Amino acid sequence: MSEKKVVAPASVGSSKENAFKSTEPNRRDFFSWLTLGWVAYLGVTGGFFTVIIRYLFPNVLFEPPQTFKIGFPEDFSSNSVDIKYKKQFNAWIVRDEESIFALSTVCTHLGCTPNWLPAESKFKCPCHGSGFRMTGIHFEGPAPRPLERFKIGLANDGQILVDKTKSFKWEKGEWENPESFLKV
Image (cartoon, rainbow, N blue to C red):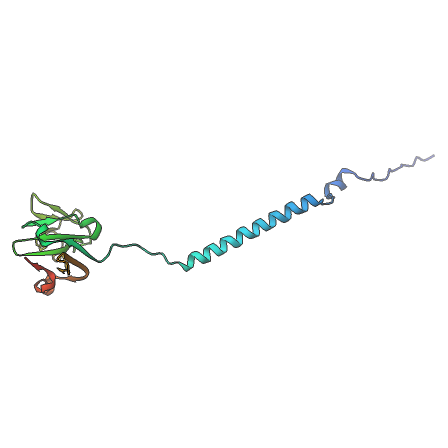
């Protein structure tokens, strides 16, 4: 007699089949996924509109005013350099025997900011060694020309008004312009 192999039918719910079956979603899982989807959508949309709104407002650099008052002529002693406007307005106020003028703090060589050395009575650029006299005339180093002067005058209230929108260059003969200095 021959033996027959009896093959048992695959049992319902075998582990291989159950691995691919998913359970029926319940109400709580559905609302959890729905909430997660809405939060993601709102986050992406909010980020997009934030970028759009930010684009509408320009990046503005707040610079100091180009015209400013520095005080009365009597406030400045003869043959002196006032450096208190160097940091805020990039200007030195110089008073010699006859006049007051405002010098730019930008070296004419490569744009560094020289320092006032009162013991040597000169401006000395730390970058490449250019030297400028108290009047702004260059006398040493690689600077090709003197420092520039700014427009200076008296305001209605008697204070000195410096206007950095207009500069005067020595090599063009503009230092002779009455707006480049204030007679005292």
